[in-house]
Length: 312
Ligand code: NAD
Ligand code: AOT
Image (cartoon, rainbow, N blue to C red; front, side, top):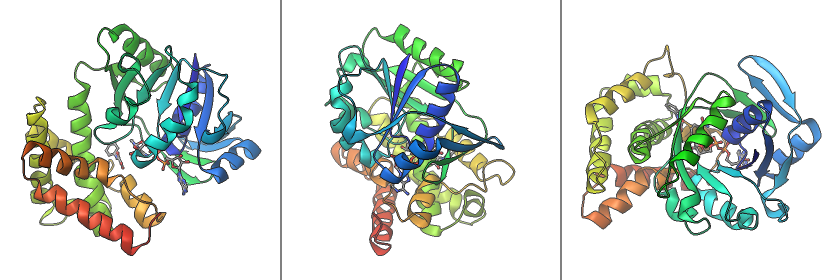
C-alpha cells in the first residue's frame, strides 16, 4: 500500500518506521527543514525499544510534494495547529481514492479535514502509542500501544477494517471502533487533565497525582468534558475515566512521563495544542450554553504561559 505520513515528528516517525518495516511503501511528509535534512543525510535514527536503528525512509517537505504521485492512505500526524496548513500543502496529492486517517490528539479535527477530503474518505482514530524526538531525525520509541479507528462516511466500515489490518500487520495493534467519538473524548479527558496541569505546574503526572487538589481539579475538568459530550449524544463514563486518570499517576507505569504539552512548551518553547483540547470544550460549551470555567481558565493560563515564554 502507498502510505504517506503527513506530519512526521515523533509519532509520524514511529508509524513510518513500523509501516515501512512491514513492507508498506511509505513516504514521510514534514515541514521542519532540519528534521528533513537529518533524515535525508543519515536516515531516520531511533532508539526502538532499546535497540539503536537507522533506516532509509523517503521524506519530502510538505511544500514540495510531488503532485503527480497519489497515495492509497494518508495518515495525519501534525500537531493540531499545523493541520490546516498541512492539508493546504498536500491537497494536490489527495484524489477521490485517497483515504485519510486522522490520529491527532484533541477534538474536532474532522471540521478541518472535511474542507479538503470528501467525507466518505475520512477516518478518525485515536492512539495510545507514544513517541518522542531527541532532536532532528532522532526518535525515541518505547513501549506498546494501540489504535482505534472508524470511518466517518456511511458504508465505509470494510475499508476502515482494512486500514486497521494494515496497521496491525505493522505491529501497531489497531482495531475498528463502533464509537470513535467516545474513544476520542475518553483520550481527550486524559489530555485535558494531565497536559495543561502538568505544564502549568511544571511536574510529571506522578507528582501532580501527589498533590491534595489533583483529583478535585481532574474531576471538575472531566465533568465539563462530559457535559459537552452529552450534548453531542456521547455518554462519558466518568468513574471509568477517573480510574484511567488515576492510573496515569502511577510512577511504576507512566507516572514519571511528562505529557507532550509539557515537552512542547517547557522543554522546547513550542506553542501547545490547548485550543484543541480544553479550548475545544470551552468553544463547544459557549455554543451549547454550557459553562466550562475550568477549561476556560486552564486554556487562558496555558496561553499566558506561552506568551511569557515567547513560545513559537
Ligand atoms: P511532534 O511535535 O513530534 O511533530 C509534529 C510536527 O512538529 C512535525 O512536523 C515535526 O517535524 C514538528 N516538530 C517537532 N519538533 C519540532 C521542533 N523542535 N521545531 C520545529 N518543528 C518541530 O508531534 P507528535 O508528538 O508526533 O504528535 C503528533 C500528534 O499526535 C499530536 O496531535 C499529538 O498530541 C498526538 N499524540 C502524540 C503522542 C506522543 O507520545 N508524542 C501520543 C499520542 C498522540
Ligand atoms: C498519553 N499522553 O497523549 C498517552 O502526552 O499528549 C500526551 C499523551 C497515552 C496514555 C496516557 C497519556
